[in-house]
Length: 156
Image (tube, rainbow, N blue to C red; front, side):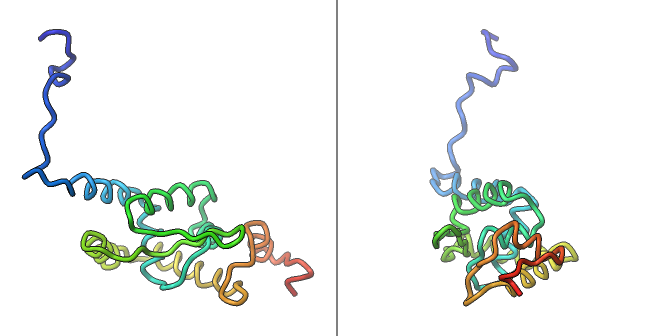
C-alpha cells in the first residue's frame, strides 16, 4: 500500500449499472425517505389533496418548525413535494407524480399505517378546521393558545 488507508482511496468508483443516469436520482429519493419524520410528512400529503401550510404541519406532527421546514425541503428537492408562497405562509403539496414518485408513493401509502400515522392525520384534520376560506390564518403561537383553551378575543 502506498499511503492510502485501508486501500480504498485510490480505487475508482463503479459506474452506474448500464450507464444509467437515473440511479443517483433514485438513490436521492430513497435517502430522503430514510427519515421517519419525512415518511410521516409524505403520508400526510398522500392522505389529503389540499395544500398544507408549514404551521399546520408543525401542529400535526408536533415537531419544531425548523425541523418540519428542513424535512419539507428534502422532499421538495427530490421532486416529491412542491411549494407555493401565499403572503407570509408557505403551502406545500404533493408534486405531480412521475413514474419513480408513483412507485414510491404507492409503497408509502400502503405501508405507512398504524396509530402514529392516524394520530398525525387526526391532528391535521383538527388544524384544518381552523382555516378561514380554505386558508391557514392561525400561526404557531395562536394555534398553541387555541389548543390550550386560551383563544384570543378576535377568535371568539
